[in-house]
Amino acid sequence: MQKYLDGAQDKLMLARYINDSCSITYNNVYFDKRPDEGVAGIVTLRDISAGEELLVSYGKWYWMKAPGSKLVAPDDSAAIWPPCIAKQQLLDSHAAVVLAAQQAASS
Image 1 (tube, helix red, strand yellow):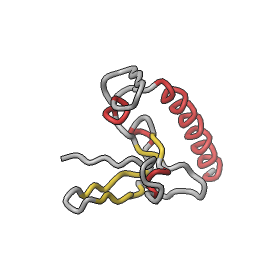
Image 2 (image 1 turned 180 degrees about the vertical axis):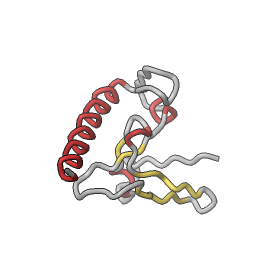
Image 3 (image 1 turned 90 degrees about the vertical axis):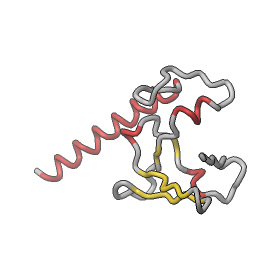
């Protein structure tokens, strides 16, 4: 059984500050779902810098339920919501800058 919580309904839920990555490629956290306990933990996939945006893919089902949803593709392999296209471009350019800085620091 799936359970979904809406951060708009519960202002104390800190997970409400985790944004949609639009693709698992950009995830830097994941939900450790424990349905028997009625909770989900948040686990980082790597070190997170201060001020860095926390990202997890909400998945197609989240956006399919969104009012006025306009899905682009029916699977998780492509951007499924038009604003995701711009977000993916931004994340790609940020990743390129970080990689360039890491390469410069190691040489």
